[in-house]
Length: 399
Image (cartoon, rainbow, N blue to C red):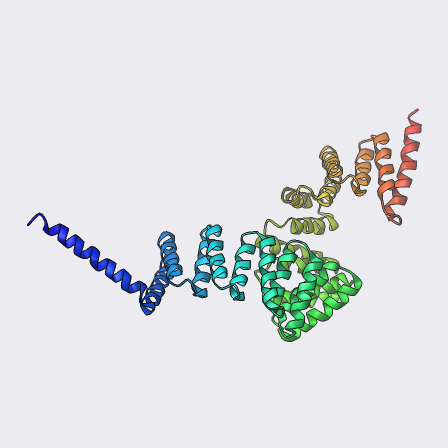
């Protein structure tokens, strides 16, 4: 073979590739076809779990189809899924900059930012949408959801109300409005929440969230009997919802159906074992039925998940007292006071522990502190005062 022949072949290939690339750049139809092919390859690679290849194809598809929203949407979703949120945001921001008047870009950007935990940025992006179109019900609803996630109930309520006004026939928007109203727990708000959630169920009887929330509202309005059917319906519609079982358990407990409540809360905890509130509620059902030994690990789990839960610590102390573990009860109740020194009830229970351990002076001190902190009208104030009198007598009888 002649030594110069490979060089000629390589040069010919290079020139051919360069010409093909130039033709591709100057042929919009060819670019679109290649972009679609890259997207198809990306989706196929993703399905097979070949993330490196999928990423390469998604980025190529975005480069070839920079104005195509759906391509960027799929690429950003994939990148978030493989733990590359920063690049996902960059892809969407580039689209927003290319098409600043297209609300779809801001919607997607807000979704990505919210998924990445940047709530403030998501709120700002949704604000941009509303500035473009102040009748975009979806933007108001999304912003309300972000506010709700941040605990800003009043701001969420305002946005949810606007979304429901703009699209009165949207069951999801009515449900979200009912949810925000129910969180306020005011009598007037609960009345409106009930009306709104009934409207949501008129629009969609199979709306599990609306059934669950309406049941919760009725229970808050001291109608657990009326709440029960809605909570049962919510569980039937969404048997994989830990919240549905949790709320059903609370309603059953309010009706005195303690065995059923215990089973419902067990289901809730199987679905979501990291719910501190559900563990606390489970402990409460067991404590109410005087199953103190079984309640102890439930309260302990609640405290493991939420160490600042002084209520769980207080009730744990009560159960330890009931089963005779005074030393541990004292430690737990003292820790509860460290977490919240203005909570009166650990002092009352600590007084009980000290009394049983015949530490009368310490018991009197704890009970007096309870009386100072307890709200007026608390029935345990009279009990504490009687105990102090008896303890003083016991002290005097020693001398």
